[in-house]
Image 1 (tube, rainbow, N blue to C red):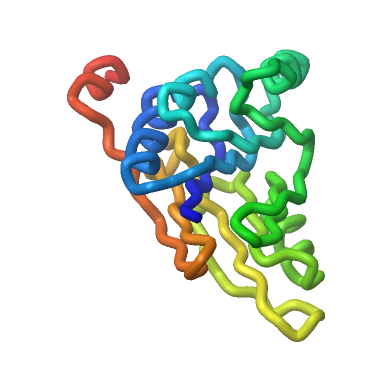
Image 2 (image 1 turned 135 degrees about the horizontal axis):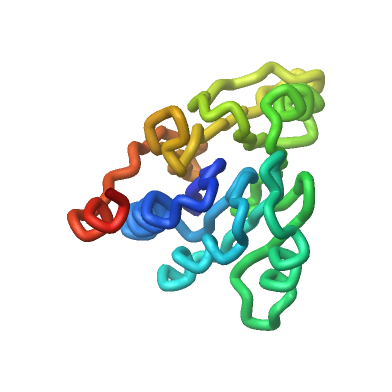
Length: 179
């Protein structure tokens, strides 16, 4: 199962849409958003790709009430968890939280195969030794919104556990709208 991990979109619809389009074309079956969506309506740009979105809030949480309302609709592809989430996808245990220090601590517990975070807009993919004598993958996809850093996301394959950073590329139409 291929997944797209992103964070810190900060209402940048153009970059978020471009990342979702590229991830969908690369075979992503779901999106994990590690917080700082801000306006929940921003997630609407992912809907045309038919990808489920697992999302938590961050420190720029925006309208959490509306995020909950969007997620509670019967046909919604948005799954909203609050400040953090422990989910299973493709046979892997995944923990999502916004803050890197919290993510690093959770990675050391041995309870998770993958821990994902955001917040500092710095891409990081590393393997952490945990107290169970195994390893946990710690993934920070940077900022898909391109806030004071290049716009990035991470593509991952849960079968092979291979993860890579991807740069967001805007189409000519999106570049015109953004600039």
